[in-house]
Amino acid sequence: MRIRGGAGPRCPWVTPGSRESLGLRGRILGPVLLRLLTEFGYVALAGLLVAGGLGVPIPEELIQLMAGVLARAGLLAFVPALAATYGGIVAGDILLFRLAQRHGEGLLTSLRAARLLTPRRRDALERHFARHAFLTIVVARHLSGFRVVVYVLAATHQVRARTFILADALSALLSVPLVVSLGYLFAGQLEEVKKRVHEAQLLAAAGAILALVAYLVVRRLRKARRPPPA
Image (cartoon, rainbow, N blue to C red; front, side, top):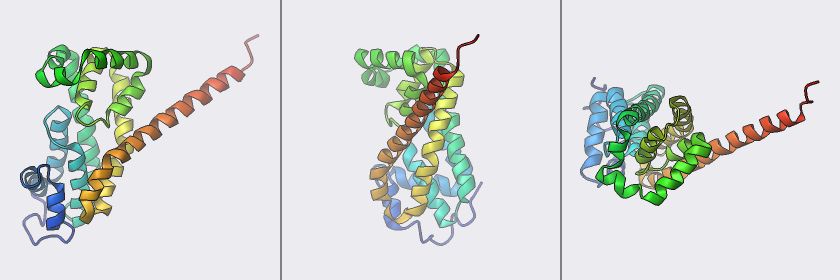
């Protein structure tokens, strides 16, 4: 699938400065990702994010920003780009969770996972899963570099698939539109935006947690006010 205009004149919003700021290690990964997205559009957008969800070292936040930039440039339509971004992220996370349900311990003993998941961290995470599995998944969705390990541990800790999918989908629903919109609105200032993306995602996660806590508190208060059965 080749995007109309992908090989045409330079788009005013995909400037040399934005190309440079998009790159991870500047001159190598950024242009490669930009070329893939320009040539293959929504398929590449979703596919790259699925791969990133499975642990391939593809910068997820960067792809989301690029989706917004290309929508601003007219190479993608904003709503389909947003849908492809969200769908790719959630699908990748679900595939990772399903894979970890079968091969989780083997994945956790891999060199990278073993380095990140120290015994102390594992004990702490397992306690959090036992008490607040939903909230732990919501927060982990925004922990770049540590998310995959947390998700694999969730699968091995027998977190229910329904709980995982709901928490992950809700957390992504709060953050993905925000990041893609930042790429769309500030296409010419991506270097500065990139510095703020992680903060924005954490704020979104905090908002989701506060909303859930408020809901649980209200529900508990309502139950406490109900008259006892006769």
